[in-house]
Length: 191
Image (cartoon, rainbow, N blue to C red):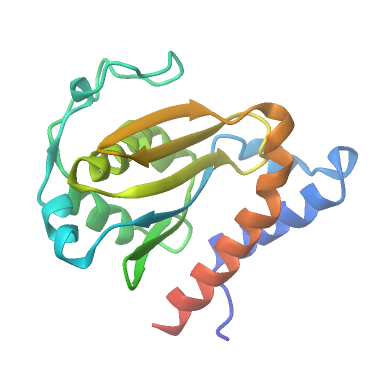
């Protein structure tokens, strides 16, 4: 396996700090609290993926946004495919990877603070729009410390639900996010 890039090494250092407990959490980890992990699995038939990617989205297409989302200056519209490609093309420290295995799309990513601030709402809308072409599953976006925020985007029956992951459940996300970063980084480095 290739050596991880600087951004990914930083993520692994943060995860190591977190596994040692809150008293050991370094200044580096605390400073990145608004950086985000992205992880999920969506069941979407192959013949519908392009339809999803061609979808035009705007934030006002949904009315149930939590108050923590900033909609005023980010209304859209965006093309889902262009948005996903833009995020995929970011540098070694911020990235989004979507891979297909049969009818399942595996979503993995790491967004540093600036990219998370810029893309939180449109990326959430892009995943929500997948429900409209028949996707089922969920994507979770949570801060790297897994204490400040964690949002679940659930898709089923042509609808999406955006909900906060309760604080008492966020500890269960750590092994999932660790696996997500390791697997996705290995695949990125190999390509």
